[in-house]
Image (cartoon, rainbow, N blue to C red; front, top):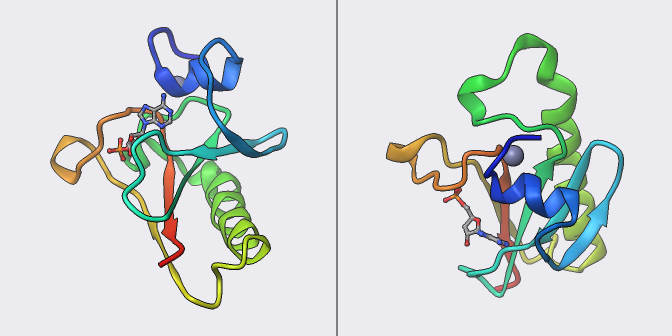
Length: 108
Ligand code: AMP
Ligand code: ZN
């Protein structure tokens, strides 16, 4: 847990969020400023700053994030119509919250 990290606060339960899914490794909640009819964030519980900070040992969490995104897209009937999975990496890549997250955008 990182001090002053918005997503760590959400995961700790001290800041509200609209959760769709939670397990021991990751959580999924709705983006507060959606850019699509469906815009969710897939967030590991462990504080990792960005894709740049992944180590060779982090393959599991990345695959869990992508596989769970695929599963919730199917469960919410947006898999067939299509969706985007997006990582913004660091400031130049459009990252504003420095706790790793995968955007799931769809529902068009
Ligand atoms: P990024 O630009 O990749 O860092 O994306 C951060 C995302 O987090 C943005 O789409 C924000 O709208 C979203 N966001 C910021 N604060 C919150 C919050 N408290 N609850 C849910 N989503 C948030
Ligand atoms: Zn954090």
